[in-house]
Image 1 (tube, one colour):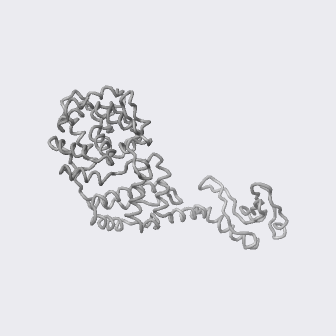
Image 2 (cartoon, helix red, strand yellow):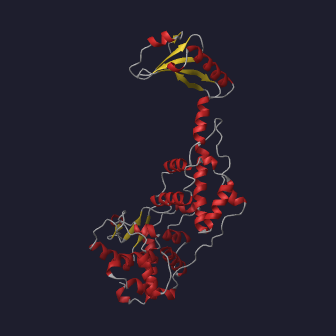
Image 3 (cartoon, rainbow, N blue to C red):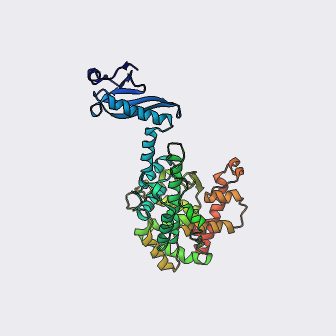
Length: 403
């Protein structure tokens, strides 16, 4: 780095570099320099090795036109004194910027870092932030207190306790992320304690009983008949509901099923966007094979169950479900059909192993043994057919119509 006794006259004579930036150190005040950019902009900077951080500290002071050389030297002396005492203005400015990061900005950084989140999860997180924390989005995340969390949780619980718990779990995840992302000048987390922890210490989480509803064997006949009675305009919904109860797929997995993932020759289907991130392949029973074959012959969409929405696949068909409920007298949700499938699998007298049952439902397990077991789809064909036979039998469908 070239040296020069800095004077206004000497600085005015300095020419701008073609590329990059050039520094001229002051021979009178160690650590003070003039920086010149290709645009010709000239400014005073402190350029000094920071022993505390083991790096060069380059701190802007002001434009040359704003200070005399004498004033710049005095400012440099002050900054250098701070560096000796372990205070770096750049770090302090960086910390101030981090302290001003809003909840919305932290959430955006959270999404950038969590690259494996599914589109559905991202949509749900955004919806929660927009509906439950709309007035907090512009607040610095460090300004969210435990009292604020406790009050908001209670307020949300007045409308829906399960929604209140879900909202706070999402907020907890975002704030946990900020602890690693945003630090002070000493490398410590700006958010020392996640304020959502207040709900645990105060035992304020709402106790939500897990739904146990499913379609019981004696209810299958009226339910099946109601599904089959849907008009032709709702035929896609009827087939969708039958696929749910005969495969145990989650509603979004079935709705997003594409024809490219249905192998009619091998009689299998594969779900690629699953909750546990693992592809899920299931064999097709005879009934499902015929149903999908019929759908394929008149398909006009890449989705097995097309819908009029912007995504192209079937959204949650509330009206059709209400119609089935009215016709059958049975209240149910799409996830109840998954529980129905799981209950049938569990109750059937088969030789299924524990791992095979979890494989049918695509449930993850913490048992390391499963990692060494290679699952063969054909081993699941017989139990899948048994589930279909059980449902059709309970529905009173003629045996001749099953094959």
